[in-house]
Length: 88
Length: 503
Image (cartoon, rainbow over all chains, first blue to last red; front, side, top):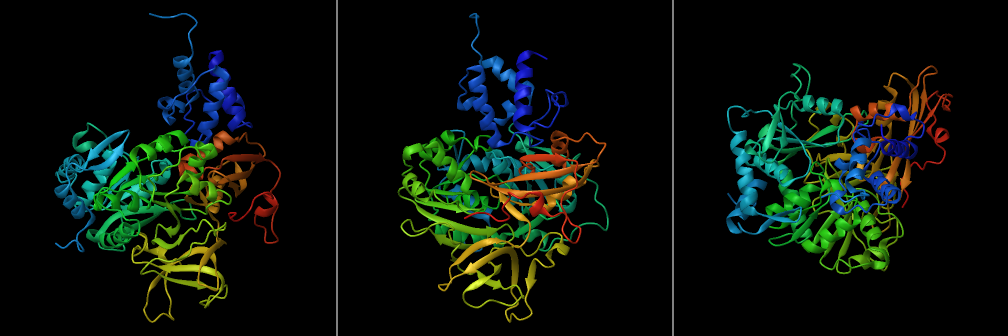
């Protein structure tokens, strides 16, 4: 698991299920189906992502599918994060 | 066939003839004309009538909102195939029980590009158990659509609605809120909510345009304000949460939404303190508090007076054709002012739950009623004042509204208690500014178990609608406080909870 995935996982656990040992949450687990993140919780996640990874999420990126699991959230961050070197 | 007798789909077809190019739906920034919607529906209807799918039994649709889903429902109405609309967020076990209870033949899922615009899942349909299950309360060919509503056990109750009942409602709604050709109506609610009978079905019957809120973006204030402004929405009907979100997204008044002329609040009590801001946001709108239930559709309405009304907003007076009674604690009909349980009988109501056994105690004919009317026991405790205006006081049972959805805290407790590592549980509602209520659970786990909130939530997700899963969970090992009769004492287990909604 990458550092980034671990950071996201830690946030999700601390914020939404602080009683759960972090290793119990699988990075691919469906957070929406289990009611861990609901549509209002989504807003909390978005704010945290923007602050933590210095991103701006526009409307097109905000759909529950994007936040379905820790892996999905990490993939979004990878996609949006400013790269340190330009790619052609 | 006269307009008065015509079914919903007949009236829709008439609109297609009269105004084929007019917009029927707005979805994802795109207008879909009556002609186009009709074409998609015809494709679905053709497939429904093929030997593969033709059947007397109802079909089930897991209703995630889209134009294809609406076309599919239209197709079912066009071929007179009763359709059960279920929430896309139901737990897998619950869904299976629901399909079994209704005896459906196929589960249909709208999908662009699939034949007829939908896929069929026979795998989801449980084998029919003989001797079990329901005889429809109304003849099958009278039933237009079946909706669901929470029961206290966790499995939703199925509510069939006849074509006649639906028509009576759309007649009232179109007149009351001036929905006609060219009227733009916002649809906020999910497709399986009875609110859609106004937002979508009244609109399509009368040549209006239903502007669909994407369920995935339903809590994004910027999106919602933009949608209402760009589509120039005239009529809005929604739970208080939508209005709260609009106000959050438009701080200091923002840009007022001038196109809205009728704004209906329904599904839950309007919270205190935001009325002035709401009138500022919707400067040309008349604002209403509309009260109803899935079993009866709407029964009471109150137009909110900005200079006079404060919370708690009354539910007001009965709709035309609605009869209402208030029963005092001793079961007697209350005359004049006072408090008691509200019973209603509406022209739009169901003839009975699909499972007739459920009618007992809920849909009642009073022995002292010469008209032998069937009344629905709402379970709401109300107060009637000297002028006959009615205000909600609380519930007679364990139901609360979470984001406009009726949830039984008792049902949630029961489901939690079925987890093998749970000894006992207490669930209570806490007032929440945005969602009406959120649920908090205190759960005592077995001494040697490693139960945590995630495993508990996974368990809940299988057996209940997602909206009913408690927002917060506290897991304990000490016994929960008990009443003198040995039952879990909720008030002591969850002391900060308020049993009834505020306002």
